[in-house]
Length: 60
Image (cartoon, rainbow, N blue to C red; front, side, top):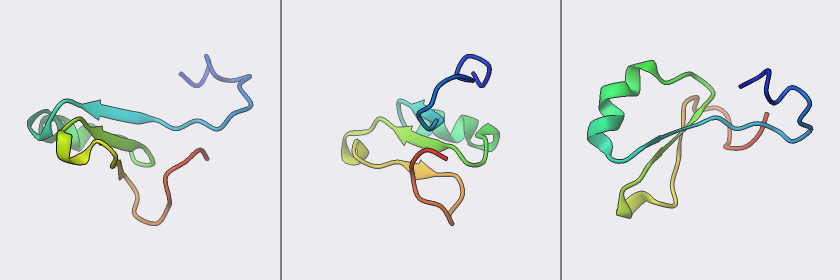
């Protein structure tokens, strides 16, 4: 992905998307630090989890 986007001037945000908590839990130990997680459940469609509590969501 880095090679593909090497000439892109916009900031990159990596998002792991899951259909529900069951699938998220299955892969949660493998999610890269400094990435975002989105879980497609109706109660949380507008929310994301950031894997590093001291930074806000957005490009780096």
